[in-house]
Each structure stands twice: as structure tokens, then as C-alpha cells.
Amino acid sequence: MKNRLFKILVSAAAILAVGTVAASPAMVADTTALIGTADYQHRVDAEARKLMRHVSAQPSKYAFGVHVGVDIGGAVPWPPSNMRASTMKMSAVPRLNPSLGVSFTAQLPYRLALSAEITYKQVGIDADAWVSGQQFRMPNPDGEDLIMRFRGTANMVMDFSMIEVPVYVGYNFNGGRSRVYLGGYFSYIIKGNFNTTPFKGLVENTNNPSETPIIVTPDSPVPPDAMPVFNDYLGHWDAGMLLGYEWQIVPRVKMTARVSMGFKDIFRRGSNYLDYKMLHMRGTLMISYSFLRYDENPFKKK
Image (spheres, one colour):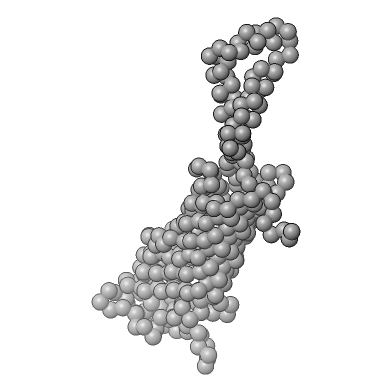
């Protein structure tokens, strides 16, 4: 009954849009002559469809949703100068693990919207890297730290399981079907793994440059006790900024593309394993579904 009444109102508005736009007597006469004809009905139907699309595209004032997505990326050296072709070359394969979460969105004045999410995700990458002189610091609580430098090719594996909480403000356009947004996020790292395995090259003792470098081959790998245990010094949280674009596929279903960058080194302060920072950077593709929508604040006490 409500849908039928809504369609009647839309058709009436369309008739007014078609039949009363003109102001001159001649145009009024022409419009009057068209009433009842097929051309007039076609115009009414077209205006009705346009008005219904506009009304249905308007987002609800408040909405709860669920989303599923995938992240591509991992921790990368920072500043970017450490990724110069003369110092490092990398061939990486991302681990495409699905993420799952819930969201809440509140529409604000001036086409703005505030959103918050809670997402569980796993982010990982496998890479083969060539480095011209990668430094590793071996902490030594009983004396001077042992600093080793590797030149050659190594395999790198990293993966992180986390709970991520993004909060961002978006600007709606295209009749509410699209928006761009900017914000920040906080992540709690449930479990982290960062392993580097040299398999071809030279290992030099920086503390004693006169010492003969160790030749590393697949048949003669670096002894485990000569490699730093990165996992022992991984941090348990991360925070950064994000930038994204969201567009409506069909009513209630939207697709999102975003990029995010962390501000914090993945290693705890004081580890000094590397001579540069490693920051979380990734791209995210996500599909969301609004399963609850309200025009009144659901949290307001009645």
C-alpha cells in the first residue's frame, strides 16, 4: 500500500514537472493539447523514473553494514629512498586473505558523512629481494651490538593478523551514489611474522671489517644463530591515515577502494634491527551491504 501511494505521489510530481514548467500562454496551450497523448505519457513516465531514481539514491541518515574485502600490501621500507633500484630490488607476491567487519555511518550536513568500522584482517606478502648492503643489528645485552651487512639475494616472508578500527569523514556526490573520504585508523596486531632468509650473497661483519665475509649459497645458508630474530621485536599496534572512494553498485550494496599508510615502525622502539623504518602500506578492495537503515538516530533515548 505504501509503495503504491509513493508511486502515485511520484507520478503526480512528474505530471507537475511536465505540465507546469511553461509559463507563456502558447506553451500552456501546447502542453494542454499533449495531455492524453502517447508523447505526453512518455514524458510523464520519464520524469517519474528520474524522480524515483533521485529519491532512492538518497542515503539513509543512519546505517549499519557488513563488509568483506581483501588487502594488497605489507610493510615497506621508509623513507622511500631505501627502495632505490641501486640499493634494493624486490619481486613480491601478496597473500590474498579475506577480511570481514561491520560498519556504522551517520549522514551529516553539507553532503558529509561520518563512518566507523571494526574489521578483522590478515595482511601478508612473500618477496624475493636483492640488496646492495642490508644492515642487520644483533642486540647484545652484555656488550656492543653485532652489526652484520648482507649483499645479495634474500627471501622475505611477512604476515600480520589484526583488528582494525578506521574512522573517516566522506563527501557525498552523484546523487548520494558516490563519496570520497579521508580519515585515520588504529590496528591491534594479534599476531605478526617477519622472517628474512639470505640464500645467495655475502655477509660482512661491520664490527670487524678485516674479517673474511661469509659466502652464502643455497647449500651453505647463514647459521640460524647468526640471524636476528625479528619476530621477538615486532610491535603490537599500528596507526595511520587512509584515503578512499566508495560507489553504489545497487541499493544497499557498495564497493570501496582505499589506500592506507601507517605512521609507526613495525618493530618496537629500541630494537634497531634495521637502519630504516618499516611501515604498513596497503590497498584495500571491499564490498559492503547495509542491512539496517534509519532516518532517526537509533541511539537516541526515547
